[in-house]
Length: 404
Image (cartoon, rainbow, N blue to C red; front, side, top):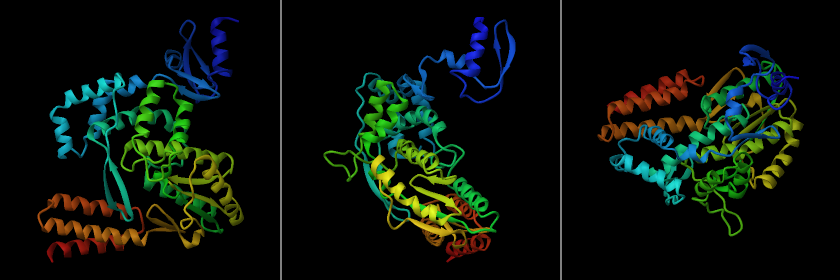
């Protein structure tokens, strides 16, 4: 068998057989050979820093990509959007090149240490404790996200919707609605939805477990040093002398690490529990079935997996099994047969916040353009529900508040 035939045989049947299908590649004397598997041959063989173990892509040279000056300046361009007028951002930009080169030097020589966070509280609608990193550190977060996210995102299930390009809350609600319609056979048969929430998720993420998941795909010691520095920069009140826990709400890297951490749950639900209709957004997830007993019986396995594998707990007061006809509450919307409405609490919050914005405008704290942008933003939220009359009412109140 010739070298060319050997190469074709390996591509069709061996090492590269798991890649997508159908491409014409050039082998031998330049003649195109049609094969059944889509392979990027040149890219695969040129990339000596990627290998496959048991079908899993392993990366062992990503540190240089993270800390490269090109990546750091791109991270700055991404980070600065809508932040140019912030005082800390303006200070950093005043000596931009000097600051970026210093960050690159600290990273390259492993002198980098993550600086302390500034914490504050917001109410949206419940009270959340936000931790804000310095501009320098947030640029690094963006740089890490730009490199790490493409490595891990292909391993996520299609119906995980948080912090991924082309996805998001509204796409998640659309998919949930489609699943409910399919399971109910176009609203002709009863079906049920198990809705769960993970209790204090961001404050409960175990650092050691998260790191052990990351190590499976990343075998670059320098990159792992940097990742450990970022993860260890924050510890929640759940931390003990034996367990370090917590991801800061507000970090871009926290969104990525949350998806990586809960991908373990996604794989368990899909491959062990065999749930065909499952959708998740961060720590909220829904499993749909026409069998009420099946949903009731998987609650205990879910609890045990989360507790034993990820050291997480389901919120006891936010776990429900409801009929589709009663409405399924997910991400601010209530999905019902043939229509979708806004959650009552969300509706009240929109009216209250827009009223406060009009007060800010009358007091001269914001411009009219900013006020109108707020109105259009809330109307955009309403446009994803059957809420024509509600949107008309909101606009009427808006006019009244401006002129009272």
